[in-house]
Image (tube, rainbow, N blue to C red; front, side, top):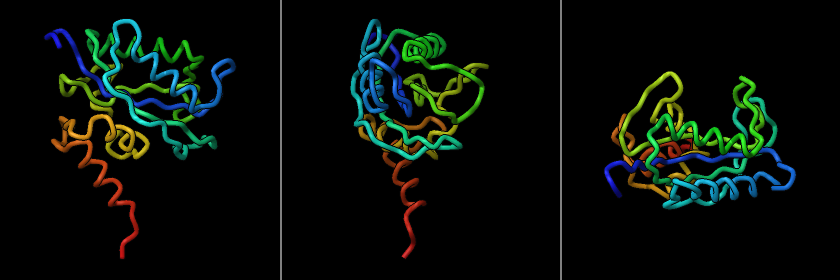
Length: 167
């Protein structure tokens, strides 16, 4: 990897069918393939898992994660991910947690923490979301969160321990 290369952990999710592509699981599989096109190299990709919705949506999600290498800096990577979402018929309507054809989020970046008006890395909510951490831990278990210092494996273990019933 050259010094100009960046590594990103990308969360991938869908809960809407797209004509010509198929059900959400197929949308996620196709999106994972798109994360390896052009100047993006998909270094690893997680399994596609079915998860319950967050917020008012009633449709279950298909989620996954990928580690992507690219020369794109965080702002350019965000623009690229939004272009991929648009190609998958994503419409941004300003309503959080609504059904969507495709959601691509930058979770972590090899450069550590980053903040701008458009983007915050690490993703501010990822530590509390099993639908992000479960697939992410399969592709980058030892990647450390630059804020907490914990690995994805540790964050996932803490999250699942908190949710499990006490004996």
